[in-house]
Image 1 (cartoon, rainbow, N blue to C red):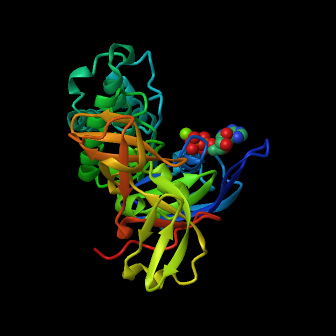
Image 2 (spheres, rainbow, N blue to C red; image 1 turned 180 degrees about the vertical axis):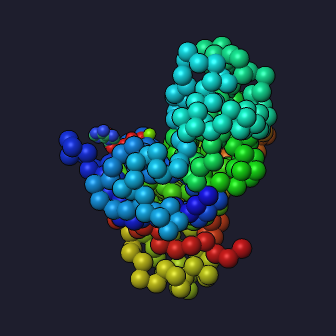
Length: 363
Ligand code: ADP
Ligand code: MG
């Protein structure tokens, strides 16, 4: 087991594309760290560099006190699970699992006991004589995990391992991966574009966009104190509402003022806002938007009733907004609605550059 340290990692491909612009971060021993970002943000490139399948154009990779970026993949002692599983189709599950052990000359008896251990843990001990095509997607996924787990490795790398599974199985495997991480205690580095996976499994999330680190923080911090507008709107579903406006001092009260919505900010936020730019973007999570149906400037466009809650889409002037409401909300498409928000719940960002201006008030 090992900590992992990325130092100014850069990847420029031969065609000139820069996949990663100087990424630095430290992953603690035993952590479950997730790289989260949209397609093309540099997640796979980063993981492949850690595995040794791609050579960085600049920068260093360390496992604990050992520099590894000049070593071959085999000398790094990492295990990797790919999105497409990459199982050998002509081999049984047993042979697939044995392969990494045979390659390293592990004696037969040790191979058998190691396979028994891993297959029991992953609940695939009944599938040993089948071939990959005789398995469901979820079973193939488990075998791929098993093959990565059979030999001890310092670091466990997973690139979108659940993306080929259906929604129910994905949710199930998320829970299993959490348990697996807990029982193995190994450093896991996980890549996904799925915020739900990142939020539920990770000890910390590294949010990437266009080859640059946007935020490195716990799931709670990423959600409740996003570092910039990109993180704020990428994490959360439905996405955070974003309103452009300005900050004004009215007597003693600092206010956020936009075309149709004015929000008084609580005192605790004033000191921090000293020197903030006048033009700001205010982010409001759908669950923080309060609706009063039947009155006001808002117009409900669509109500999605999902059983346990309703998602209400509306317009306020030219601004489109989305709110989470109670399942029984009387809001109906085409009706008027008043919109308000507690000033302590507002996320404020510089309109220019998008950096977060202040944190939330202490609870
Ligand atoms: P992600 O896994 O986040 O979807 P990738 O790491 O695969 O993103 O890619 C990051 C960027 O690098 C993208 O713009 C992608 O097109 C580019 N890229 C990846 N591999 C290559 C390559 N072999 N040659 C040129 N560009 C590449
Ligand atoms: Mg990828």
